[in-house]
Length: 120
Image 1 (spheres, helix red, strand yellow):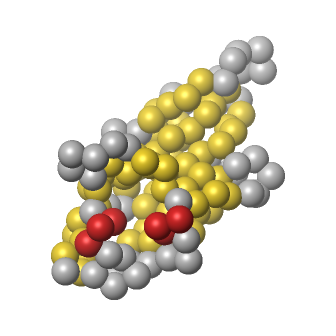
Image 2 (tube, rainbow, N blue to C red):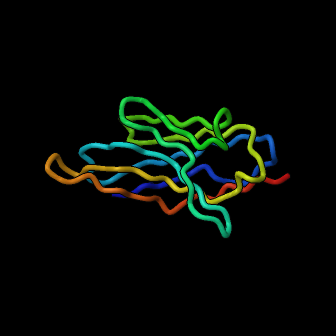
């Protein structure tokens, strides 16, 4: 199983970006999928998670600006980021809990990350 992110880049403050993360490989079922970020010299932190049943949770710092969504058929999760701020600059990592078969345990997977840089 692989998680592959795309959509990062450099934008000015106030701009928008949309990140995508597609899960591929032997997949029987996908549970929660979400986004984390890690800024230089800081710990990785949760940004947003899409839970089973359509519920979502967000970090306080991004509420009202970021929106997470997913395409169940494509095993893809998206992060729409609006009104970006310099403090949003970080490497953004996709995370997902995936079952490879009905009898397997759910495993946690991470993407390699995509850089989001916001200039002031």
